[in-house]
Image (cartoon, rainbow, N blue to C red; front, side):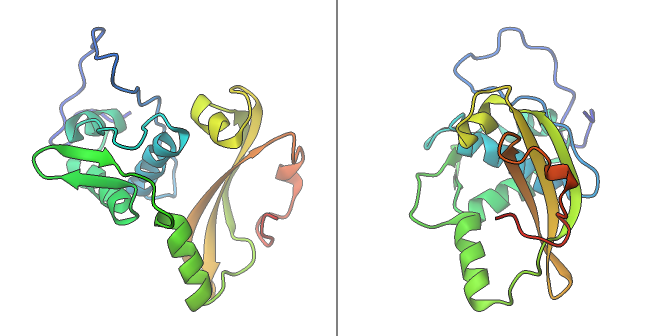
Length: 191
């Protein structure tokens, strides 16, 4: 993790941390994907897994900067994306909170509108990563499997008219597709 980033001094060890605050877990940035997007996706996993339930107050910007090893500007861009997608609400003078669920918001809503009024996605995409690992608790909860079970993490850049339009990360139980890494994921959709 990067330390000493602008506006965010290194985080001192804190054995007496508030147990009421949900832990963030380990964050390892990946190459070739914008850092603010990776942070947004990591925070989104905390929201979707229930680790950060509706109404939960997000850790302070300073704490998040230290955890992710980034500047406030990078962190604020990640949070702004979550706000614009309807997952997080900022309350002036109070902090940022997980939003209450809405019928249609965020990625699912914008994706369906994009598909209806915009040009269709090209089949497949450029594969950035296809890695087998063990499911962490939050991902396992979303997939409905036990933590530690074997999963695939598939990350692809998606295109429309041969132009990159999104980064898509998929988690799949390895039991459903044991040979995923031998499939042509660059030219086919997941079905």
